Length: 187
Image (cartoon, rainbow, N blue to C red; front, side, top):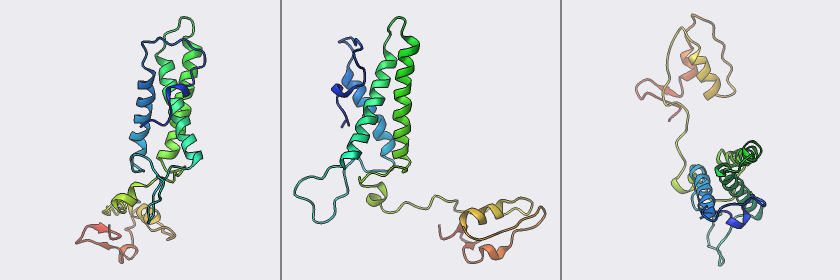
């Protein structure tokens, strides 16, 4: 599924050979988008439907559709423009194509990283909550600040002070670390 069409390409009045399959550029751009968005959202993108299901299939919000269409247009157009070989236009034309790709990738990564959220079903809703992405073990070392780093990062709000040669205070981890289980914070 693509998010835009060949007619939406941002190539202006560039003469593009009939041999060039414009649809392939649009499809490849959509596939690239899905390859990144699929880590966060269930594909194909559709809004999460609650019980009971609506009589008319739900679609993404209009602004979300436009965002995805714009990313697809810029990415496909930029890739197409970069493949063109027009005498004397290498620097200007390729700069435009590169700018389109850069803008598309910046926008795509905002969505893929979760900075811009879509109303689509997130992967966590489909497969259950993913496991915590923090380390599952604690590395003890009396000569490094690793324990204090773990305390500061994983136990937010707790103040810890460390000086070289000091062992970390075992009490910091007494309620959450079990040497026998090798896990931290119930992970």
